[in-house]
Length: 250
Image (cartoon, rainbow, N blue to C red; front, top):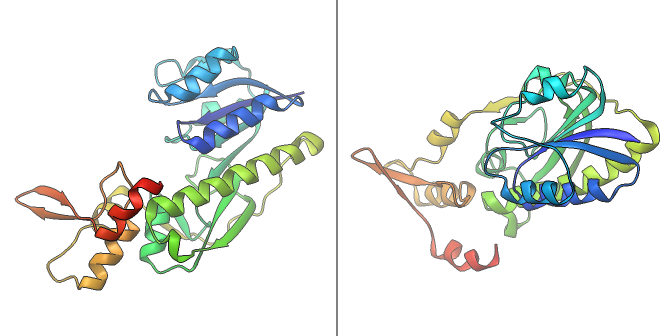
């Protein structure tokens, strides 16, 4: 039986991942590392008597487990950098990044991918290390960015759905082999910070209509701020009629 710690947050694909892990008879879920806002994950853990580690008690992990006591740490949508003292509790640690690596590291990569004119997208499982998005690549899968995915939130959803499918396949294989192997990232790639996001989605007076529409689509990611104009230090979000017609379908 494989001992696993699952790090996640309240998105539907992470919830599905938790339900899959709980249904797998070849593993033991020894705990979930979550942020404070993950009420859905918290409720499932309580109903299944799974130990919860959050922002208030995360340091209990250091006392609860010896180094390398856990077989596997899975980071799947956890919104913060996981400290080394947690990574060291597992023989192996893996993370899903909803973008191709090493080309797209950091935040809001789906949005930047659309804005950069990418025609295909993908997701990456990699070894989790202290270097953000820098660990050896275990597996990548790709798909075409079709016209209906030309919006930040929709491309992100597609990437996370792919990530869930990959998680199921990788864990089913892991219980047989007990190990993950990866290929080191030879290129540095691009890292997109919050500052990069804020600048990219800002609409300037010199932007053409095409550029404005591109920004609106690429950075549309409710409930977070998307493309905006700024006046007197205040941000005003901008949206199109086309996006308004899609809201009910999300």
